[in-house]
Image (cartoon, rainbow over all chains, first blue to last red; front, side, top):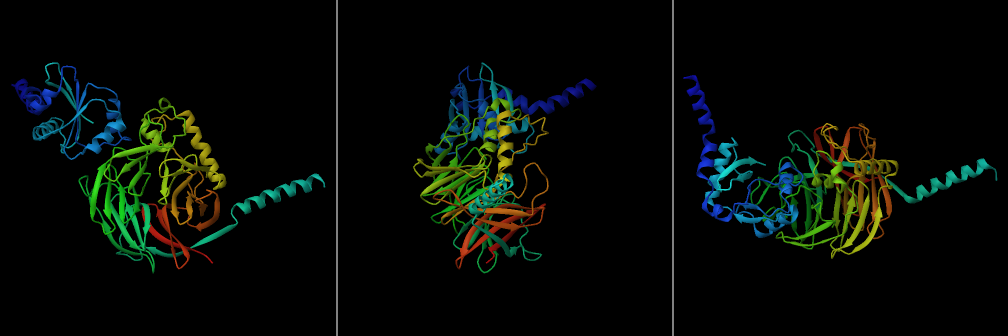
Length: 135
Length: 353
């Protein structure tokens, strides 16, 4: 009985993360990634070069097997300046409403109040989500 | 002439040369201050000043606001600009201000935002570095180049955020692998901390850690170079020496208990008419208590050589954070942000006749 109770608690706590892993990525993003796209970076939060967020982004410099997804509020100049500063080589695309829904699920899984943050997502070969981290 | 006489003559000669360097030493006297009484605006830290016409625009960092004061006929608070936030037209932790052709450019933690002098939002573009040194002139933003892998010193952006060109050369040799727990962006932020000033024809970059002062034309061609390390005598020389040490040897930030010890030569600089004004820190590098005097030096913007020096007497615990210079009825006014412990105040000083 106790084991069942513990199991239920774990399932309840892990449910938001399980949903992400089962449901996967929105079609538009899934179509963009190839099996070798191991990382997807969602840049919806502030990025500061001198902070850990900037250092994380900089660690992906010159790698071309990364998909960057940004909100519509960034214009072309903003995106180019980000690419220039962090030497980003991967493809950059705009997210949509489905992306925002996914980020809200990420926030629930990671227990973050504000969903507009930066996330790095590792994908499996079958394009399903393997791991999500906030940066 | 015996040996003693020769020594005395040499000492007198050195003293005369020093006097010649600052032929005029003025004393700055307090004229007015704000807050004046209880109930006046209580400041969060003010960190940058700019004067336009007869108004002072003061960056109040933690409240996400730009405060506006009228400065002649006494210091009086008028109003503020800024809605806190990271959206369009909002300001989040502003750090620097520059005004050109009736437009205010504000650097905050993630964007450059542009406002009219009345505070009406015009546009903004995102940035990804917290580096604050910039100047807004001829409709362009001249900003310190943040990319550690790019050897150019300054990058230029249009008001819309298009990166136009880069110029100048980074001049400090840094081995980023010597810095543990500190990324390349942060190391450069300290090494190249300084001030960018403009007079609509030239851009002046003044480095706080080594004292390099470089004058460029707006197209990026170098005009003149000097070093301001020695104008603050032993204070500047000691700061330069100590900064060179960490640049060469590197730092393990964990061993330093998370504190990066960096020693600026000057706290702030301001360009007014034909002179660049610099204020020293009023503090011997590495020592906790300050001096009772802060020195302001006026450099000729054409020759980059010192013209005059002003002394501002203060309490040991007072710190000058930033300042701006204006002229009223041919008399120079220094508007200074002074911080004592957690309290900031705006003080107007005038040269004693």
